Length: 404
Image 1 (cartoon, rainbow, N blue to C red):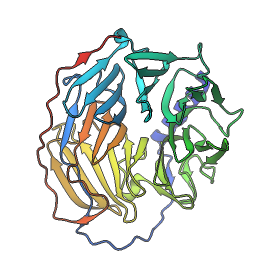
Image 2 (tube, rainbow, N blue to C red):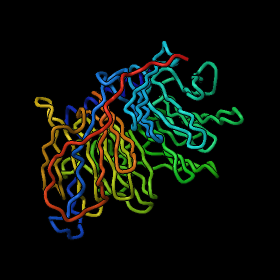
Image 3 (cartoon, rainbow, N blue to C red):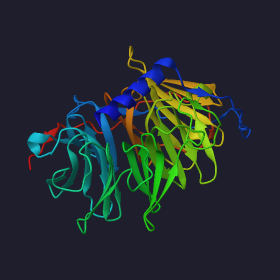
Image 4 (cartoon, helix red, strand yellow):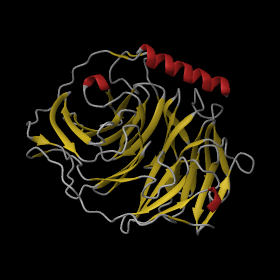
């Protein structure tokens, strides 16, 4: 495994340094849209860091469930109550099995919180107690868990050595690797469940789809088989090094280290920085909101495809010198609006996102951002240029640590 990891790191470093990613030009016809038809821009932001009570500022996961926002960090687990502003934390001294929480999902039927841990395996938090599964006491294929997803009575874990599926009723484990799944590599980065299907983002294997009723696999890869270039536009996955997957409204959104894409079941669409939308081609993940809106988590800011039909984006960044925020609205690569604001995302390295009605929660390498959209609207609307406004939100209560 060390050799494979070194190979991956070496290839990635060489590709980035040498600028190997080449995208052949392509012109797409867009439906005519009036310039005054603009997307919603989030100007009201609240930040949560260690100053407000988080156990660590390096955020790997955020998951909204009712009034609670679960946060996975490099130094523990946190729960933010949106209504009261109270933050509770759990570290290893409080029973958390491992300090680095890399992914979170919540069982909608039971309220059980499932945690993927970066080196600590899989954990369940329910009834005030943690239960843990790892390589030595279960069928978990590896203890480095990048993603976790609840599927009916099952829990999936995406690990660096394949995927594991745990039936919480029968206790049965299933393991999926190159031996029984179409994995060129077994390094699984992300997992999501929707509409009876599991989607895995896999290093070197694109996106794998597992149909739950039939237990059959389907693979989505870059069909031109070129690692360095996107030879034919919109022919499939833009690259085989997949980092994130999100499925909503029968649309598959997927990200790679070299661009992102959208698939509607018949047609693919690739997205690249040089076309003027996304702030970077290096993606950490994606969260789809609808068939026409997706939030792309990159190393250089937050790229929101606000309206797919018109190729209208909102890019959120933070000025590292002034710590002020900026939102830039672009359509077909042309800037339509720039909004300066006191706050935006907490940091430009974005790692997590979850939708919360009109609001959105963002995890970065320097804290959590709460984008408050009281008057949010989907798509485009004719409006005057937007200006930043302040917002009143509950003040965070003193953080507390629970021991179980």
